[in-house]
Length: 207
Image (cartoon, rainbow, N blue to C red; front, side, top):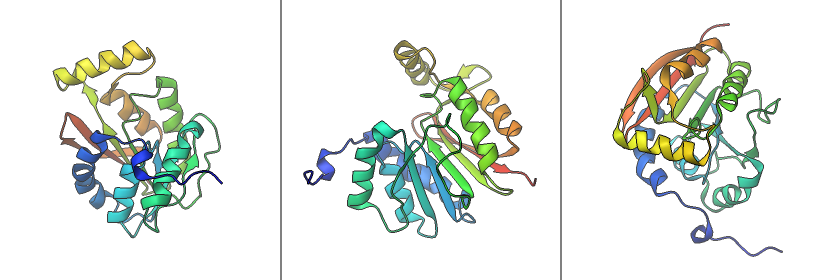
């Protein structure tokens, strides 16, 4: 039998701890009418645990790439509330996505600038297939507007991302919104949050 995992042994993001409160403040009302949320790229699981605990009417389905699942699964097993499901392996490029047809909302944080643009396009194509009429999409992270960064720190962050992987980088809001509109999603809100990040929300129009 493998040794018991402890929270202290798991990957931890200080940024997640800082931003989970401000995100929840905006995300909660957006998901008030939802029932089942798919989270794309749950990372350490800190957001999934916090949001599921504070939004108990939702079934929260976390996902990650297969290599990242063990730590995520361990955190959920250790501190996840009853409405937080065991995580699934998800690569946005591989269809069909491994989630139920009951999903009526999707959330993702700090993923678009890690994905390549081809992966971002694949992600929105999948969202177009997945979300039902009235379904909600929430995306948290840094964005550029009109080709300009919202802060010098975001410009430096973008440079560091591209130095590590030329396919990554902070995305242009206009390009992302165009993908969303192509998937049948209409922008509902764009809120500035601490540390030069945004929460963007779209809703699926009637089919």
